[in-house]
Amino acid sequence: MMILSFVLNGYISKQKQATLETAKEEVMEYIDTSENKENLNEILNLVSSVGEAEVFIADDSSKVIACGCEDWQENKSCLHSSAIISKNDTDIHLSTLGIYERPHYITVESIYDEGIVVGTLYVTAPVSKVGSLLTAVTRIFMFSAIIPLLAMFFAIYAMTYRLTKPLKLMSNASRAMAKGDFSKRIPVTSDDEIGELATSFNMMTNSLAQLEGMRKSFVANVSHELKTPMTTIGGFIDGILDGTIEPEKQDYYLGIVSDEVKRLSRLVEAMLSMAKLESGEFNLKPEVFDLRELLISVVISQEQRIEGKKLEIKGLDETESISVKADRDLIYQAVYNLVDNAIKFSDDGGEISFMLKRENNKTVFTLSNTGSGIPEKDLPFIFERFYKVDKSRAASKNSTGIGLYIVKTVIAAHLGSVSVSSKENEFTIFKIVLP
Image (tube, rainbow, N blue to C red; front, side):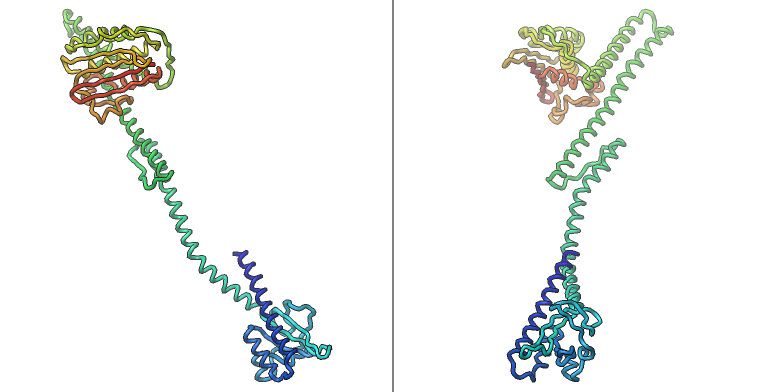
């Protein structure tokens, strides 16, 4: 605004000075060319009106002898003739001439007669008029600028609000998540970077909410799994010690205690394995071994459970011996978990099939079982930790929800892959590919 005022002030001043020069030249032309000077006052009055200036002539003694103002036209006397005008050598300048209260723009021209100065022409205009014009222009500018400025303000406000609102919502949601509340979501209202950030934030919130739910479920399941065998063990041991259980039945109940201890051991082992896998503390110890023999040893270890459910084992005796270089203990655990799952979720009298082969320089192991299968909606999450397809059924079958997670992690550590396909109430197939 200051720059605009400076530029306008200079421009208007120059224009006003040019106007005064033009008015002076018009009067001088009349004086030089006209032989009859009777209409001089009228010419001065006309030039004063048109040029918005005050035009007057003083003689060589600085006494006003002609003026274009209305007072002079009526009374031959005016403000200019009431004082002796002070002389100044400059052509255009600011001065009061000794008759004005405030500075005026002044332009002068000497009048000659036969080479002798007989008078001086003065053309003046008050500086205040230039200031008034500048003020008027400034007002117009301000009035013209206020609308786009307001529009720009509201546009910037709307843009800023649009950018900061999702961030504020994310901040509030983050504080809520820190307190355990995963219910808040960020509305996605655009396709730009902010929209992508909101989408990613919502996906992260969904994952955290799911993980938190699975964690709570896991804690509840583990608590139940620990409490039930410990209660059983404690009850039977107390019964033996206090004589409630007769000596001839103690061996039977000690067998139950042994089974419960083994169950606790499996649970603790699974939890320790998951902790090691997640922390990255385990180191692969690769060795060459026969994968077929490992499969057979896993099946033999579960012979009692297989016979108890009258399951039919197929394909194991038909598989060829294939040697692989891997961590035997980790592969054993992965295969054990798959076989354990197959037994657990097979119906009585069902089938479990094995297939082992070489394919494109890779070892492919397939394990399938008949039974209830896995719902299609659960297949994408089956390898996530703590995930259970049927929580009520899984709890009754001693599931911790981390067996398949361990399988995926172990196979990935060997740069292999594991996949699953299933059809409800018919079959489930797990496929492992090792390099």
